[in-house]
Image 1 (tube, rainbow, N blue to C red):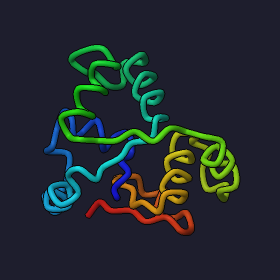
Image 2: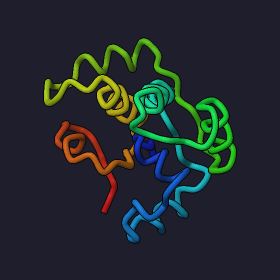
Image 3: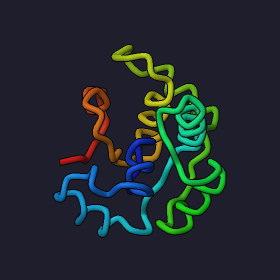
Image 4: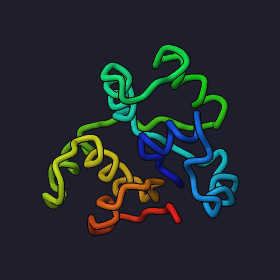
Amino acid sequence: MLLLDTHAFIWLALDWSKFPVSLFETLEKEAGNMFISSISAVELGLLVNSGKVSIPCSCDYFLSRNFDHYDIQQIPVDVEIGIASTQLPPIHRDPFDRIIIATAQVYGMTILTKDRTIPTYPKTKVVWE
């Protein structure tokens, strides 16, 4: 099971050239077994509103279209994940990453991320290269 970090989802939807070629096999193998935290919708909306990310349509349409196209399932942020995110070591303060890490840990998932800080968390599996 593969949990997409927000940037990985955006790149999957908009620009596959951002992925290392070595990841293409993993993406094909995990087709139908990819997930995203609902917190990524918040992060995407904030990135679009700040002008840091440009998408060709509204956030809700962009998300639903790509969830359907890539068969990505959503995982809601519930109390268990919220509390787990507060119990992580204080490696960095990004609440979005902390929730994504906690989600992966609660569900036993591997995170698809280029972020170099995320793999430093204990009990966190990451794939990129």
